[in-house]
Image: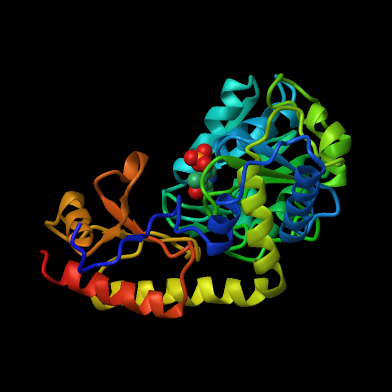
Length: 356
Ligand SMILES: *Cc1c(COP(=O)(O)O)cnc(C)c1O
């Protein structure tokens, strides 16, 4: 890469690291059973509980976000139970696959990719259902679901069911409130809104979800984790360095979370405005602040777009699943400010201006 350009990671995960995460990662190795490690673990856990706005508990699991999704499905539902899964992107499709593999009876509700789920869609599903699996910010299409309205509509029919949410690109990016929104459990990952490296999944369990646990599995067994994590330990060796990074970032972020969410919103609007100027068509029906997602310009391939950004130091990403080869995504979810958004908007103009 040319020294003329600073390198920019503009993908919806992993993202540019928060300096507090980098600083925490440069500290000497902790032993995970030491008193210092337990203190750091409890700090990260309490910070995450505030971020999810839960009165229940957050569990930290070593693994990517998908490990957290897997753990929730296996520990909250028994084989044979029926769950409703609206499918409108790569990550909602992942919920359906995990639930299927876990032996649940999966009722798929197919929607066009890029669309959001509307409360009307949940008006007359043929129940009963033990759960609803939702994706708050569908990063494959850039769409944001109103999970609060969806939980309310679903629970009007199935008050006993659990509503489980993939908040992997919404936690610390878009407002979130577990119990206030009628949600029972949620999952996030370290390499997205938390601006840390990949490797940790964060699970939020409401008091109701904790009561309803049906633990399964060995490594991702939530009963084993619940027993020990309130003391600052975990059942197995955790990625303690990433736990320390999480604690350090949250210490900085939580006191100014509102401003941070407003910044992510403003940055995303700046990027979409630049796209509109260029005549690009946005994919999502309702835009998530986590990432932009645009259809490729007529006659231009993803390889050309990727190369035009790469020439200017920037890494972007294309489509997944059925949107592969049709879209590209540019995200400022990572460590960045408003001026970075203006710089990236200009970079978009120059990269795309010469194509097509
Ligand atoms: C990144 C992401 C995931 C999880 O991906 P991992 O690679 O397992 O961390 C899940 N859902 C959404 C919406 C995501 O953006």
